[in-house]
Every structure is written in structure tokens, then in C-alpha cells.
Length: 412
Image 1 (cartoon, helix red, strand yellow):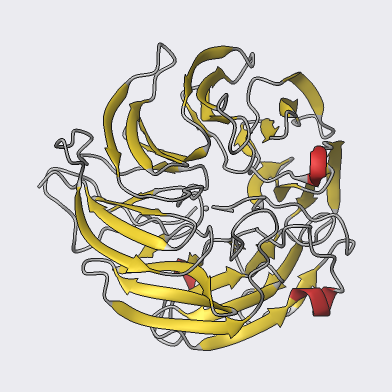
Image 2 (tube, rainbow, N blue to C red):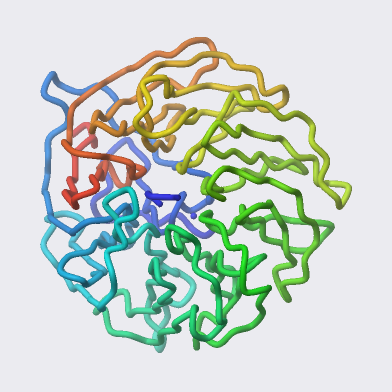
């Protein structure tokens, strides 16, 4: 389950603050698809009450994170048997548009609602073809919407068009846009659509989808995509979907949700339910395990990799033993661990921005030396499994029931 469950130009907005570098966050895991923002100069030191709340909105049940592009904020939520794609004004939180479609909540052992995060495609913005936003529902509705007005450009019911098998907790992949392709984790090794028309470009077998978002990388001089699937990790050639390799990775309940993390010719994969992590050497064409252990067990949200060290949540939701942890990538050795419960995190300016499942927002120094919290604030109540987002001097956080808050960390 991935509740929260991602390379293009950094956009500077009119809301930029002096002596700082601001950056949009227009897709899941950010512009560089690694959970790391290039934003600098934001404030990691907060007053006792925490950062100022700029605005708040209610978006309905779900675990979709937010994307931020050109002054707009996008997310999804569920209410009254409808999923809704929301677009807000980044500065004020005023609704710009929303688009709804009928679907089920699907609360299977948790609240339910949409899991994927909207993706904004910057490459489509020109005089005749406006910017587009792509969403993927739990039941396989793939949508391409006008990012400025919310109108439907095309839609594709993936379960019908592919005869695809839906994972137990529904589709959770956010959309990856690469060139003219729109890719999602559906089928045994992903599926690619034409981003302009929604027509299938290539497909894999109908079964075996996982909950991760496809991650692009270079393999032998060609672009490829890596995915965590139902019982495997696999890579496919970007242009035609030809499978390049597959590595068995069977987790309880077939939950492989965290995205693969690419580091040169190696890929790190982690899953919860007491499974663990593995570092795969893939530069030779077929994957070989460099190490495998249970030191990092990502139930759903991915780690971030900074300066050779992995930072992420080890353990399952609801367990008192779950920790925020630092691992050395090359060895899998634990450098430090702090009891926090599960949550989501990203990184910026050498710091971790962490939201725990109980709604505590923290800034943590990204160092293997020791756990060091620079700031803490209780910013939400309820269950918070969704990854927080820093964009243009503001941090966006949401909980399962759909409270979305925008917090000022610009340092103004």
C-alpha cells in the first residue's frame, strides 16, 4: 500500500523569497524523482507554536500528496462516493477548479480513498497545448486534465482497456511522464500510454501490479523504468516495454509499495511487513544482491538517499517499535534510529522534512552521526501517512480525513 500511497526544469515563482532559492514540486517525489528538493534558504527554526498556517482546505478522505506548479496546488480526495481532483491557488488556498468522478471509497483495513499524487507535465505548455495534469485512481481511471481549467483532455479506464488485475488495495502508482509517454504501475511490468491521446503504446501481462510509481534510469545506454511489483522488482525498456530483468521480492500480502531508489548501477528496494531491504547491482544486466537485511522495512513511503546514506521509516503502521532510521547505502549498516511511528519524509538543503503518523512535523539534520531534530511542531491531528511537500517557502501536509494545511517556512 502506498498512501501517500517525481526530471525537468525548476520553476521559480513570483512567491520566491529573497536570499533563497524556491522551487516547484510538480510531481510525486519532486522534479528529480528522488524526494529531494533543490530549495534553499527556507526556515528550519520555528517559533514555539510552529510555522504559521497560511491556509487550510478540506479535500476528502485519501492519501494523495500534493504537487505544486506555477502558482497552483493539486491533490485528490474522496467524499460521497466521488473522487475529486482539486486545484488551489498556492498563495491563498482559494479553489481554482475541481473535477469529480464516481468511484468507491474502498476502505480495506484503513480509511480508503485515492492513493496516487497528481503529476503536472511541464513539457506540454506552449501556445497551442496548455499544461496538463495526470491522475490515476485506485480503480484504474487514468485522467489527463487541463491544468489551468480542469477540463478532461482524455481518459482511459485501465482495468477495461487492459483487462488488468487491480491490486488488493487498488492502484497506487502516480503517473510518470517521460518524453511522449505516460507510464503507470499496471500489469506485470508497467504500462505506457501516449500522453497526448491516452492510447496504449506498450503493455505487459495483465496481472502482477505493485503499488510503487515507475522510476526511470539509464540501462546500457537506453532509458528504462524500474518498478516494485506484486512479487518482484523488474525493469523494462522505456521505448517498447521489453523486460530487461526481474528479481524475486515476495512480501506478506504482496505489498511492495516504496519506490526503487537508483544510485548509479545499483538499485535499493525496501518493503514492510518485516521483509526488509536489498541493494541490487544491475550494471551487469542481471540483478545481483550486494546485501540484504531487515534494517530498513518501508511499509509504504520511500526513503531518501543523501550523500550515500538512506533515511526512512523502518517498520509497520501502528507499531510502537517503528523508527525513523539512517542506513549506510553501501553496507546496509544502521547509523541511528529514533522511535517515531511511521510517516513520510522528503529532504531539502541537507535537512529532512518529516511528518509522523500522529501529525508531528519535524526538521531533522540529515547526518549519519546521530538523530538531531532542529524543529518540531504539531500541525495536524488524525492519521498522517502522506509525504509532506516543501515548495516555494511553504510546507504542505495532509491527514487521512482530508485536512490540508499550508505552512509558511519562508523565513520572511
